[in-house]
Image: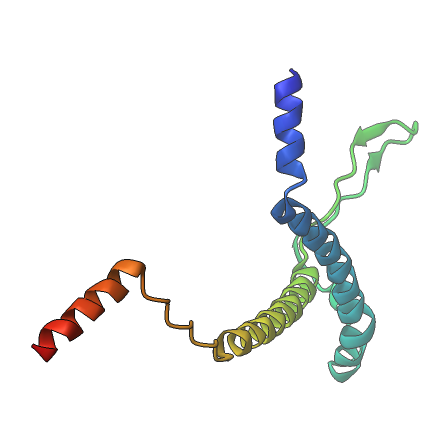
Length: 149
């Protein structure tokens, strides 16, 4: 059991796992900010432009609600049934949330890619020529001596 705990500790404390956890937490907070932006800032003016329509309440009624039927003695003859609705207004709002989040992530990734390309484009200093080995120096001297003769 001790080896398992050590292995898990080594895995959990790796940089990638910690970075991912931070990303998930920040992403969750960012999602709340975008949801608030859409619900509280973007959708009200759109609602005004569309004649006061609140997108949260847009729905198509598939089956009307049925009230409970009670006889004269006060006994319930049939139970009430809620309306069956297709809530497409919330779907529209969630699609707008998604598009804003996707656009934001796209911009951040594009910016990070541009920054990483600038780092790669920086010219690296050429490596210095390696010093010749003793054997190479000796062979060069022998060659030069043979050329003189």
